[in-house]
Image 1 (spheres, one colour):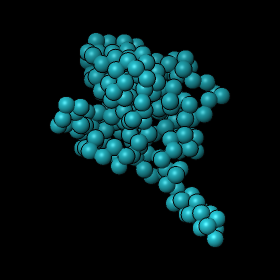
Image 2 (cartoon, rainbow, N blue to C red; image 1 turned 60 degrees about the vertical axis):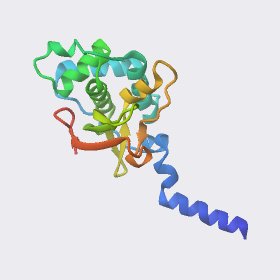
Image 3 (spheres, rainbow, N blue to C red; image 1 turned 90 degrees about the vertical axis):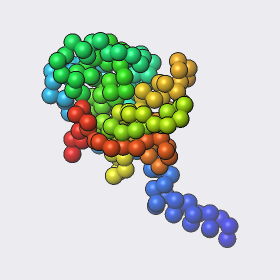
Image 4 (tube, rainbow, N blue to C red; image 1 turned 180 degrees about the vertical axis):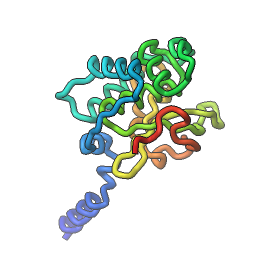
Length: 200
């Protein structure tokens, strides 16, 4: 009888999708990719060049996303993005280009670079502006990324994970997590914020 109940419980969990919904690898690997460009040649060229360096066709979706996330954390640092300042506009493509060439930037730059890389891979990644919790208490303005998978919004925030790691191992606390999995950490207020809006 105990085995029967355990089997029924396992079937219910699988049917509800709760195990799969918390598994980034499962979610990303079971997503159909639709690569897109930013529409700005200078940005698209650096995105494709970066993807060629850090990903290859033999990688799974999950491995490609993780490689891009790690690339930003391992190769970029928080600071004034002087490369982006060469552009008259401060839009998402300029910020992504600046981060991928200069490797220095603020949360906007980390998020725009990640969104551009994700779109190059084929994921509908967009930026969100709002408030995030500060380590010292209170909240501050912030921009992060969201990818909607199976109708659920998942946060990807390489700048915060970079800040948490402080040069040490990455904990992936903000990699493919729902707002519910990080209670009190994010208060979104504006999708896109002039950078990367949802494609659909």
